[in-house]
Image (cartoon, rainbow over all chains, first blue to last red; front, top):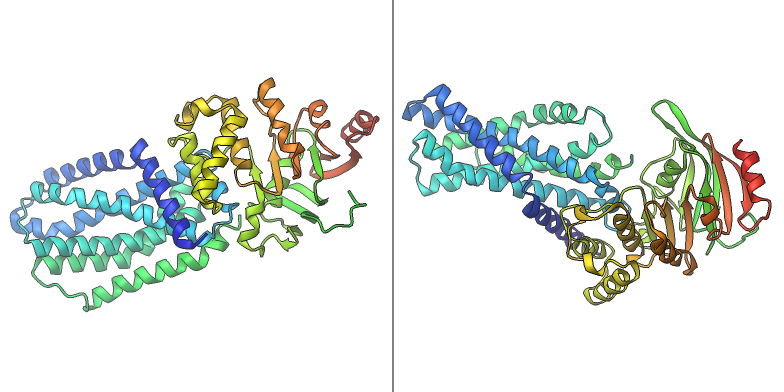
Length: 225
Length: 234
């Protein structure tokens, strides 16, 4: 069975499970809404400040909801030892990594997309289509690195009793460079500058590739136990 | 088992395992030849499940080595796992999906084409008496039905080697009847069970495990098997 077919089978299964249970989308949606309300009502930003605050608030929301999504994904696989069923099948472990990374990316991407109009409404932002597309593009790049790193860290902390703590401790420090790069790129976009060739753009893409490559290389070792 | 000269399907040599600073297995040797049916029997905490996890590569031993289909388990080609069927205490299912969706997922992982998967699923649902529940989510099943489904999953890709941890758990009389089929196929089986009276009828060899060591071995049809068990596990 090819890596692509196996990856698609894993992604399809995760989507079917989520479509039935909604155990990622509903808690994440509510979490996003509460967080956004809290931000807006406690900060009460002026229109100019909203534009400055948006990248930080939006990325905070994605990073926090991302870790919740990863934890839910762990719990789901632990519930009936589903991971063992895949590990002892003839499917290559890289397919397992790719499947999990792309499912997480897709779930978080949808949550991110859905929350953009809510942000715009609550913060009173007016954005051009180009700015919107730029934000979505940067969001996707950020989430790709986040999912690639998050998936391997999730599997690394699989057998650890305090895995929820360990996941956050491992993941967040390593996500600081992509967070800074994404925040800067979004701010540039909101000010009308759309340059991926800048230092921040290269940094973000570089970390994405680094984390994705690291995940593919490490997956066999991580799953040894 | 030692008399068999054909290459073993599964072999463990001097396998030891430490979990939470405790020796769970100590220098275990095991050799499983073609079409053998070996019962691993011992008290709770003897190390049976850990041994099964080591033998299929879910865990790695601290010392010793395991060979599966002639390959060292840590370097075995993934394709050879196509011939292995594993049942642990849980079924590996996605609870929200239906029985059929779960089996189709596993069928895809094992590279089965749609037509043979359709036929196989049809036949196995009928074998296990689960036709009526095929479109129900797994979480609606009783313990016994889940175990039936787990047995169906294990047989789905027609493996040559079965590793089964407590395959009869929760099964009623009817299900115990068809569970016997797993043992009459030309398949090699290593299994654990606490029901010695039932299981010895299905096995060719009984290995007795206690405190992480294989303490005795006997032919399953040995008339003095119960004495061997009493002595070894006393």
